Image 1 (tube, rainbow, N blue to C red):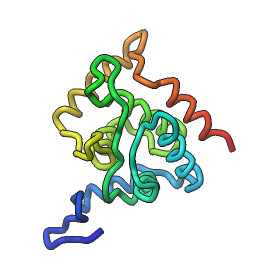
Image 2 (spheres, one colour):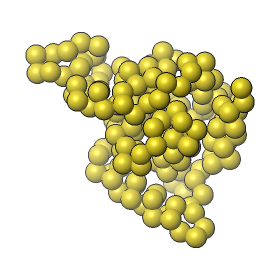
Image 3 (spheres, rainbow, N blue to C red):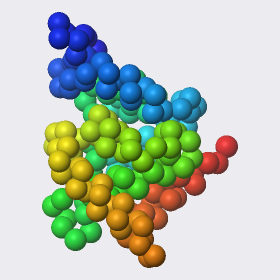
Image 4 (cartoon, one colour):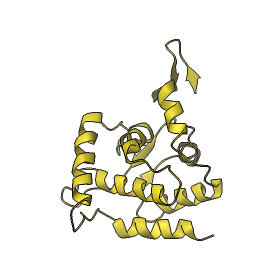
Length: 164
């Protein structure tokens, strides 16, 4: 990455404010690289959750940011055309639970905006994320939480990561 004259970290596809880059670094723990590599494999095997270069993925989950971003491929259960943001939120929350990402619900939006892209490689829109996160959190606070698309698959991936 390069720093331009306005103090922005830049590359050919993504621009990050230096403060945003520093805040991303503070979100991630010193999770072993071999576990991040395993997470990458689990998310890209079979019916993939993501599309990304392995080095970009490892950099992202090591707190070093991304160059191309991680494309989120999971579709919604109701509308097969739309990306399933609740499933992405659930994955991030589960990664917080096992200690890959520092636990702070307020950082959900920052993580998604900085690291993830839609299936076409476009950044998620901040306003639509606010609405999606609010709806997701309301659904999780119900006596019977909303079940996200591919929840069992994510639970299996997390279980695999916990195996030494």
